[in-house]
Image (spheres, rainbow, N blue to C red):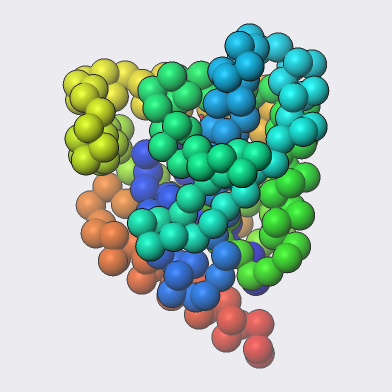
Length: 224
Ligand code: DC
């Protein structure tokens, strides 16, 4: 079974996707982390974030792997733990540029489909329901207000010791929404058959329950 969860930056997708995957015993794949890892790679190699040929050449030798851990999911780049590095502001501010490169997207989509072919999966991102897994049994489009999303990111940052003013986060979220939804390749778009969930006023438990209910409904419909 495939569950696709898409939505804008900071809508809480990864928290919800992780919990849904744990409840169902499915693998969780964070596709944003894959684009972030490619961005860290470019940064480390001193590549221009728009230099598609150089980034593609470097990507050939790059492995990105996930490992579940009690603290959440760990992300490895060629075996190195980059879980924290991929959340640094330098990465966050440049990942939109790297993820807009068509060849990078083609490569990542192929990798994401290969991961999904291996087991039941919950995958989150921007184009999962529309492009990566168009036949996913359950598709969710998760949204929340800019204010709510900035507030969440602010709290996450404080917990990690990162100090960015709330107003800056709101600006960054708006800028990323704009870039992610207007880019030429695979823009952030709601699939026609996605369930639209506005999480602005919902608790995490309510969101997880709403998705699990859709999964159960899908299973019983499939049995009929
Ligand atoms: O979900 P996130 O903030 O970790 O995503 C990081 C960036 O990667 C974000 O700017 C959008 C992009 N992204 C994408 O283009 N396609 C995906 N499937 C996932 C993320």
